[in-house]
Amino acid sequence: MTTRSFTRTPRTFYWMVMPAVVIFFGLHTIPVLSGMFFSLTNYAGYGTWDFVGISNYINLFQDSRVLSSYTFTFGFAIVSTILVNVVALAIALGLNAKIKFKTAFRGVFFIPYVLSILIIGYVFNYLFANSFPAIFTSLGLDGLSGNILSDPNFAWVGIVIVTVWQAAAFNIILYIAGLQTIPAEVYEAAGIDGASSWRQFRSITFPLIGAYFTINMVLSFKSFLQVFDQIVALTAGGPGTSTESIAMVIYRGGFQGGEYGYQMANAVIYLLVIILVSFVQLRFLQRKEASI
Figure 1 (cartoon, rainbow, N blue to C red):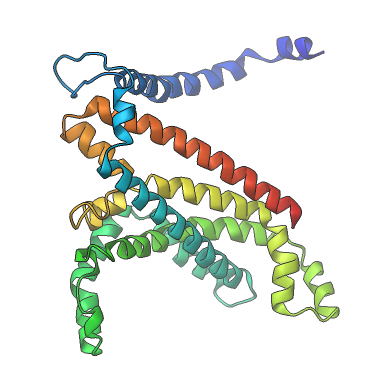
Figure 2 (figure 1 turned 135 degrees about the horizontal axis):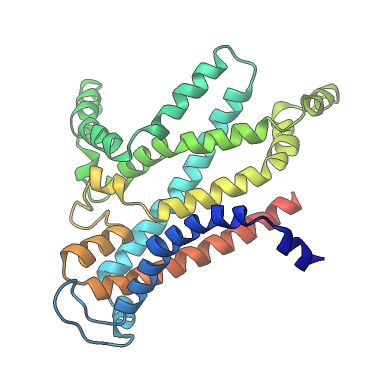
């Protein structure tokens, strides 16, 4: 039965799929395989090279700069993922309520997502360096009168603020889509039974949008683990190397520092880490979703 269905499939569908497969293989699979190959060499990005086996991989675990970038990246991703989803869900609940100008507000909240993160970053760079210190100084808050991006201990906070402001828009759209699948009759029945707003959210809203919560958490965390543009626009990895992400270490070392082979090993390790983390996160959230 399966063979008969396969032979009856028009060839048109295969010709529609083939261009995407060829493009994906040429622009994604081949570069990945090439990177894995050079991760076993001492290639500097130019000139000759020799095989060095797995020494690049061993050296990565002894490189304090690489380990520091992993700590920063995971801390940034965890904080940003939590904040983005809390902010996005709160705004989505407001935009899904019976309020005036609901459609206009949805358009306004989606604007940050269509803007380039580099442009947003440079704008906020100016605000953090000039506007915000001037405002806090005029309010007598001298402790906040400096540029947060120039402080090694708090520069990451500025990056998180910009990231959450820009990324929340996409999550808001997904949460609104989930909220609109919940029948209004369910809330009417709960209201008749005397359920409070918090009880309705905890027992009806959140369980019924559990799948959307899982998708948002997984996509957000995976995206934030690859943070790069925000850092380039705001701190360029500084002050010092305090906000240097893994992607930035790979870019700088591989394309500017003559460490192409070494950073390819870093990229391979990081690829495996992202796949593993995403898989574990997805399975964990799906089980939680089923138990609610």
